[in-house]
Image (tube, rainbow over all chains, first blue to last red; front, side, top):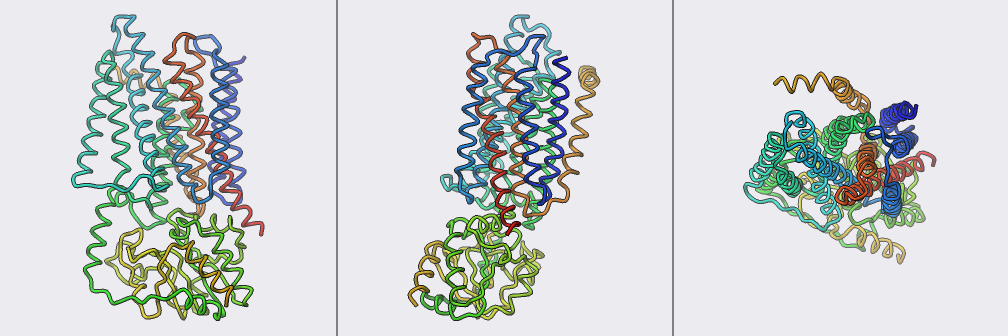
Length: 472
Length: 104
């Protein structure tokens, strides 16, 4: 009776995951979908604690289990509630790493259990445990790579880990991966060599680090999405191990959906996955090639001039980008909008779908700063309105306004729809320096006669701009 | 070779689930708009937290004097719960922003 009940609970859990994921891919139902999947998870966990039977016996060690659940839930909830909107991707990466570590730990404990049993029976019947060892090794490798990779991605996003790439890095990474797989294969061949489980662990962790290390910070969302699907597969390995259907469905579902999502994200940014994963090299080369082309001089504009131009304009369009997100300048950006509106200037925002390099990033950021929804224009609306604008203020966006996407078939971003800011009378670009943007390519826009550069950190510049306009 | 074939027929059900779930996973998010990529990633991230069930089973079946299993299992349950709770809460917060936007 009880085990039948658990089967039904797991079935419901699996169905909520599928429906939840489906609802998550539609804006109108996304939030309910997330809560539905959360509910399914809750009953699956509760069912496991109270109804699961191992060899006819109920689970014990309840005090340990509940204190661990309590600690995890409190820390998880607290950090998820406290995290700033701009730091969301790194938080997701962190949680993903925790899931990977959990899967790796399960493999470690299960292998230990197995090798104890093997030593009781004198290592007699190896062939019957080999499939189990295979699953354990897979879970260990994938979970560890996901954990180490996610931690590096987390460090990169919050700025503690710098990009690092050296010659032959891909080759060394590949070698480490092969070594890890080789050690895994050997352990499956001879499960009594339990020292190999730790060798696999170390090599996999190392590979996770090496895998993410050379990839640029702006590509991290794609990498996190990929590692996310890894963790899904690692979780499914646990499902295999315990013949647990809800772990299996949940894990494989995320593994498959995560892989597709990774590809979709790359597509939205008009890049290939391969390009992202070994992109640090391709990117540099592209920058070098474009840099070799003779560029004209760019002109700078001073803060007081910018303040003047903007406050006497009829209509200003703000184009936010990654620079705004990094500087966390969304609130002060809203202040600028308000103070300009007080002076009778019409202010709108042009939102490129992949601005900020995390799809939907700008919508979330500006919504957090209470910018009203009607002021956010999507790419097509914005392109219709640019010609009526006196000033376009670009805040740390680069590739999404790069005319090369329209007129240079050689460019890696050729074909990506861009915001056609040049239709406006004046374009002011705020950037920290003349360094090329995320795709590593020069932007002609900065050298056009209509364009003026306003260098500095977006937040600082906007603060100064607001006080300048106030004092006018 | 025979081992592998045996194993496949023993685990027929599971293998069916895996194959079908791959298709379901791909089908279900096939038409997601790009603004939802990040919340969807985060939601999927929470769902793979289901791995915590494995960690709970480890702890629940460990003998009370098997400290290695208990300590590693404890750690695994904490981390897995972090993944589940944190994942769902972060996703909910992201989507709350979208809702607010729509309401205005």
